[in-house]
Length: 423
Image (cartoon, rainbow, N blue to C red; front, side, top):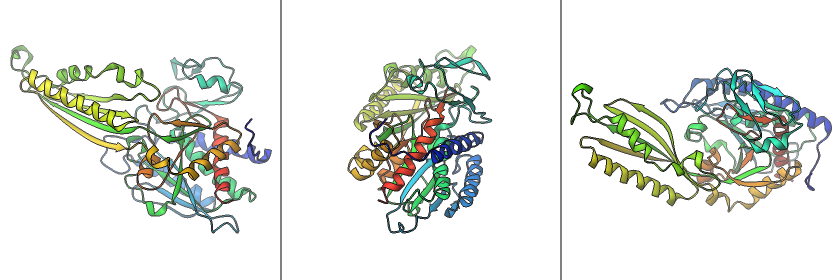
């Protein structure tokens, strides 16, 4: 156990565990997948409906200035403990949506009690199992309760866990007056999973320092993320009856497939780890006449991403030259920056997070995210926002899981942070 552990009473620990598990299991049943194909903000109406539920809960817990704006963002204020009103507020942020990569509809959470280290099987997917080979962290969770889906959906710990932890902290502040804190701001955002979590956020509602509860395993504190780009590639060809196509047809989707197959396999997500970047093809659709591919490009170093984009431009020129009549359009859009350059100057925000994790009895693991959070965009906009673990693993997957202890411990970290910032 960490030497700086500040143990809460058994009553409070029991409350946090029971409350977060209940809220989490309730929240994951509400489908809130975002959609890349939508032109609305938020991209799906079910995020609005989930936000309405949270608004009611926050009002019932005594939060003030609780609103849900026209874009689906939920904001609320936790009044400071008596005598601590003068401290600077801090904010806690989590996102409403789940990844559209795997179905998040009709999720049924399953609690596997006292995990024994063997394979976890799924009642709705007999071809699927979860083992220590899939996620080595499971070995650390032997003896704990593990939550999964039934195997036919993702679980939704990204980021229903973060929301459950923040709302449970609010419930604890209401119930246990000995949990002292200064002013707190709560914010729940839509569309984080499609890179639009802060596109309509109202920074006037946010304090100068925030924390996202959107990380993975217990102990992780993330202050660096990918530099992120999205690439849409349009291939335009010419359709001709296949029986009379020689020398005439320019098959857009066939050539798109050839083009995409030339992207280095060694730079794909399934072949990279650590600080290695990648190209990731997320969608390909079309016909002989026209095809569209969506690719994300990720790296910790922006110049490496620039090299990947130049590679795509070179391939475009080669294909247009080799296949007369083929037209290729590349559309690059920058999604978010590596937040390290903004956060490494914010020593107090980072040190407070480290202390809060240590005081929850967990070793701190300062880590680089192989992804991004709303905190990356907010940090670039002048609101330093480190990312703290929410506890789930294998996100965006039917094998996604979370130990119940992580829900409790992440909530303890929130309570610790609130106290530390008001000392």
